[in-house]
Amino acid sequence: MPVTPYGPRTAQWTLPHDLSVIGKTRGLVQETLTAWSLGHLADDVVLTAGELLANAISYGEPLVRLTLRAEDGTLWVEVSDRGPELPRRLNLGLDAVHGRGLTIVEALSDAFGVTPLPDTPGKTVWARWDLPR
Image 1 (cartoon, rainbow, N blue to C red):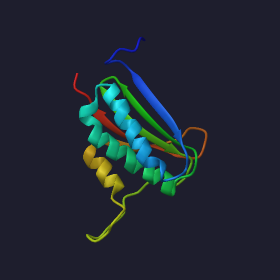
Image 2 (tube, one colour; image 1 turned 120 degrees about the horizontal axis):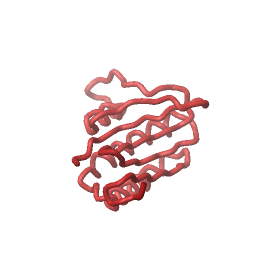
Image 3 (cartoon, helix red, strand yellow; image 1 turned 90 degrees about the horizontal axis):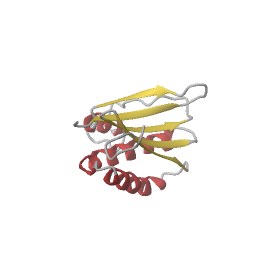
Image 4 (cartoon, rainbow, N blue to C red; image 1 turned 45 degrees about the vertical axis):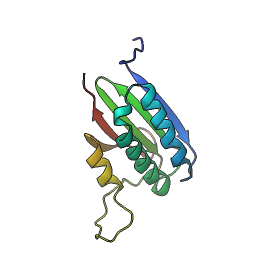
């Protein structure tokens, strides 16, 4: 199927297991969404990608991979890592200064979830936005 401005698009990065990469990666997500004419979603998607990457790098294991995918009226952000532990929401008090990543992802996206990697330890944590036709 040919790629059109509104057709299927994918961008993928394999990232170092280092929190310092998140800032640069946010810029790559912003640039990609702008190129795909999806800049109106950039604030929410960039924040979501940063939260998912922070979790994967902090609690997961290498390899960490970020995928942006736009197809069939949806935009997906997927972050995969090889760590066996599934992400979980923390029961936090009002004074907590971290630990709200999944709550933020849920609030910004239309849906999110976790899919185990096939044939290897690890998982993909994803968020999805429905695109107007």
